[in-house]
Length: 488
Image (cartoon, rainbow, N blue to C red):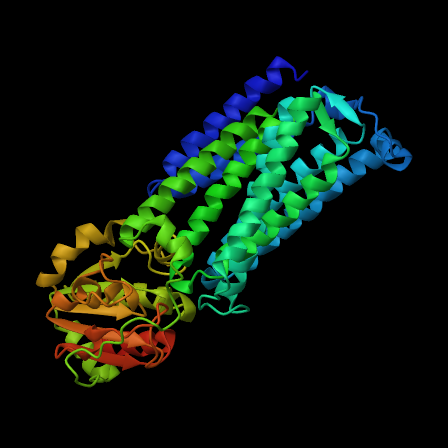
């Protein structure tokens, strides 16, 4: 029995989580929200050590070796604190060393590790309960154990595949295989797990025979996670990461039911719900439904319509000409994309905007919800460069401003500025809301080369008469542009 004061502190920690998430809703308070949530996590972990069942475990197991470890305080606590130390060290090093361009990969790994941990806790709990032929009362936990295992397993392998795609270890193009195989894996996992749950109620506990079926469901879920993400193209990774984040929270909540831990239940439910809401918003921003994202095999396969504008050619410009155009403009809208992140050019862009403002130019930033490789990717990059929050505008707020803008400066944002999304019914991104850069008086596009965007389709914006292409590494080009604007 967990003492009342531990539950009370768990409620306080959960309340801190809720307030922290609320603060994260605004860039102005996001840092405080993150810090408050971290404090809540530390509080929840610290008070857990006061749990009498942890201090004095009464559990008996069949394995003499495990039983000896369980009741040897020195070994038990050494194992616990070793895990905390190693995990904290890895987290600290990653937080200090991971580049902003690699943040989507880091988020994918964290999602996967969270889901994997939840699955392993559920598996270990099941195997511990099922070590006897029948364990009375265990049927009450069977459903939570099974759901925590299945969801956590899918999250772990799915997140690892997402990481591989983002890191470039696995092709960003959809990797197709017979859809019936995915259906069989999903059905197999649910049928085996369902039998274990039903059998637990029939026998009044978890039975030894069900161990093999349970591990079979576990294996099917792991393979299902791989099969679920492999056919999804790179352009859909922001949605996938958001969905997997929701899965992680849901798995953690079920783990909370398994362990009888209220803070895990509340915290997991918060993450699961917020992740699912964010997934819906991301799908809305792409004008697609979740089923199409998961099973449409869209993005990065190059199979979409290739449109070459009016049949013309891309018109290039020089740094000096671009500098003159920017210096004598009254209004400039900067559109950041993944090219900005890859080149780590956010500090140069901030410097450029600062110089333009000193010259009396109005500068704003247009943020598309799915620009980059994860939700909020551009906001994080620009915040790192100390770009004022007041200059960041969401798509629905900034789109009316393009018609009045003298220059739209696009840095690597290919797909989210593609006008074919409005008019070309054959385009795979048809119907997706985009930034109305083509309505600006002049457009400057900074790209590394002449390749297509992550969705693998041509952008007719590049062939319009008012568009000029500025090829090269964004960081080097921005640095040269800063110097040229200062001298203009």
